[in-house]
Amino acid sequence: MMLDTALCLERFAWHAGRHADLTVQSLALASDPAYVSVRNRFSATLTETVTCSDEGAYITSWGYRLGTAEDVESAAARLAFLLAALPA
Image 1: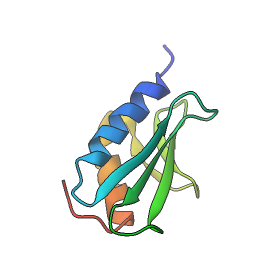
Image 2: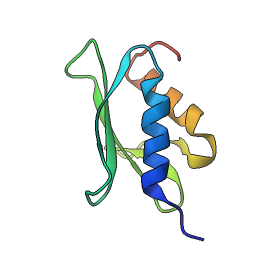
Image 3: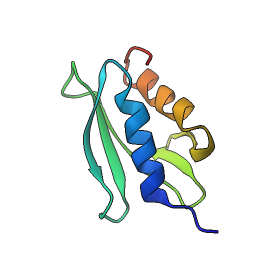
């Protein structure tokens, strides 16, 4: 069974958006690769683009593995920590 990376990214965007200091800038599901762009709402420079691998791993633009689709909430929390955001 193939993983639905678009659904994984939608779930990641939802969980990231629950963090008080994060905002989802864009969710590009039709691009190749599909990605979600998240930023700290108090800083124009604290941003990150996250993709989802075919194996279900969330990966930042610089190659850091945030976690897996099996625990999307923890993966979003790692991104919040990296972007210096408050917990959900």
